[in-house]
Length: 608
Image 1 (cartoon, rainbow, N blue to C red):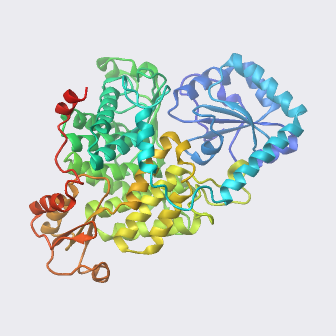
Image 2: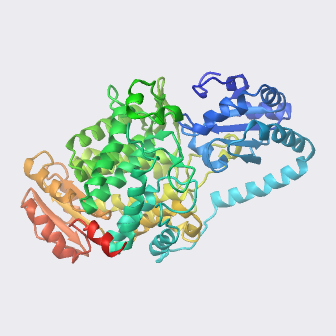
Image 3: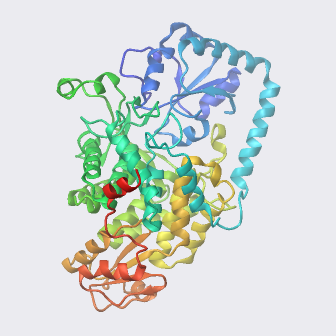
């Protein structure tokens, strides 16, 4: 039973003969000719705990499961690759498999009254319907193999994708409560970032108002915790008032990013306060100071979160999952770097540096890449694309915000490993490294739109920094495979739209030639970073260490330090005065890059 995590409240879930996900469990299912019950849960998941306390604590159900099934329990945070393939749409997931790992049926939360007949039905169906099961499984595997190996989509990037995805988001917008679509609803950070970018490049006020409406609703509803700070993972209702009380590093790091960007775009203090409320939770609850890194999540505990502030101060605190996840920490590092400028909080930058140092020292392997998580006994589970792309982005962000070339070199190492180990022959990148002996549908590698979009953005930045064509070609390949399917991706298409824009529209590129440690270089860098825009690239090149690259990119080593603003195939003369960078950008971009905050209060009166 070691390693399995159950509800912290009294329950009997540990009496079920749970197995870890491995080849032995599948072999035992074959030898005993039993179906598999796979349970996907998470340490922070309120309804997962409820299922432990009810369904999996029912004596009759425990006996039935142990008699008729081989049972496997998986933590979805620790194994997102399994969750990607077997989730029934949320947590908990209860899914029934053949001994080969093919899905027969499944659901999310199943109460005791529903589980008893379901167990009997599945056991009977497995016993009597093997031919039908095998036929369906063969068809499913053929589709998985076709997607894993084939080129799906057009041969060029769709010109209309960015506008398509923006328009779809606008149609799905909830004008009363904010957000998109129907319940259950999660804070839609990626869509909000896309809309904010859409406003910044088009000036379309309605995009900004959709962001404003959603962010205002989120921070005034029970999905935001006004006492400890931070956002819960999702709400069961459209009104954001029935949250699942778990909080994760990933959700809150992304929330900090969006509120920081909105404050920078509007200069409205309410967004700054909300951003700091998110950071308060991350810093006070999830930050592990001795390691200089963030823990993964905080347990859902409805009784605690329903207490008023004075009552909470003496109440036992919800449990914290002390697992250190690479992708979430890398995301947090990127966000803290960006927010250090947006919120004018220089100490955020120090925290981001600590996180990146921990991840590189403890989680990076020259041959295997980044591990997925770090536990008390060391790094665990190499081989996930998400960890590689989030780490590569964080390293490039550190290069942009700090000007230290070491981060650029590390980012290149990670990206070169991605291209070596994750490239699909037909284009794009697989979500996992291949393994012929992998259990279940892990035999089939997937190409996921969000991860490929992030990879494309990183590759494009590397191309802009180095003019190495292989990075540009790989970026385009990662986007082309979704050109025929992005419309069906719903919320997951938002990062794709941003990546399409970043890879097809020339960025605002500010190059600073100078020693990154000098005060004058730092002043030029700070002035450049304060400019808004998600399609902006800032680069510091040291004449002492990067003379060859300076020459290759067409800049001069003198004067130094000096900044060059490049836009629309044109570069400015050398700029030595930090206060001059903003006006030069404004004149060169003809207003394409918005520097001044939007007068949101005035806009709301005109467009209620």
